[in-house]
Amino acid sequence: MTPDALQHLLAEVASGTLTPDAALQRLRHFPSESLDFATLDHHRQLRQGQPEVVLCDRKTVDQVVQICARLAEHSGRFLATRVTGRQAEALTAEFPALEWHPLARVAHLAGTDRPAPRGTVLVVCAGTSDLPVAEEAAVVLEAFGIGVERMVDVGVAGLHRLLGQSAKLHQADAVIVVAGMEGALPSVVAGLVRTPVIAVPTSVGYGASFQGLAALLGMLNSCAAGVTVVNIDNGFGAAAAAHRLLQRP
Image 1 (cartoon, rainbow, N blue to C red):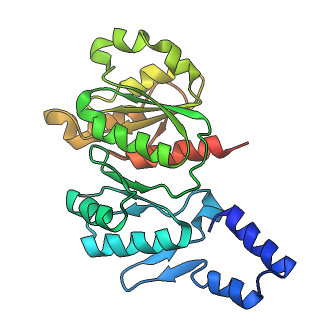
Image 2 (cartoon, one colour):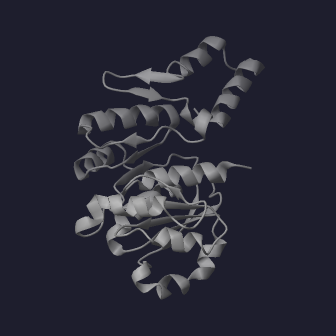
């Protein structure tokens, strides 16, 4: 239920073109709807500005399809993350207009009221191995109605690659920096720009990287002031944080 849809519904009741009983029927699953295996939060868009997002990890194909179908019936759209190939095939069969991004593992049914992009977030990726996490952040931002620019393979092992595109860094409203190994790139970027920097450690690295723990600790201990850090491989969390920042008037 979007703010515009709710306002339109109330206007119909106030004008007499819709009876209170009919309005109540439209709102029968508001604010939440219970399935045997999930409770859907149809009130989330009103509270947070975006509908509930479906995390598909460890869900069965049938569970994913049922949840997404209920969200689509209620709002006309849905966004799903960590989608497997089998889940994507089933969703595509059910929703031919589905947008499936295999690298990001994100599936998106946009609906008919796709908003015009608001603001721009630059997603900076340290290495090609970090691209799945970076793309998760970028695709989620686009689904949220945020403009996205990408800067790929500009890690600190070749810092000239980043500095050669410094104009992009200064044009963005926020920057998401995705890096594995020692996780140094967010500190470099945050030392160059005045806009919010959101750091995403990835599980990319050798030996003592400890599946991203080294990058996480490096980012938490950044010498650049004000860096926001999300969890390991959490491109979605970085996108959600950037969306919240850009919603502010």
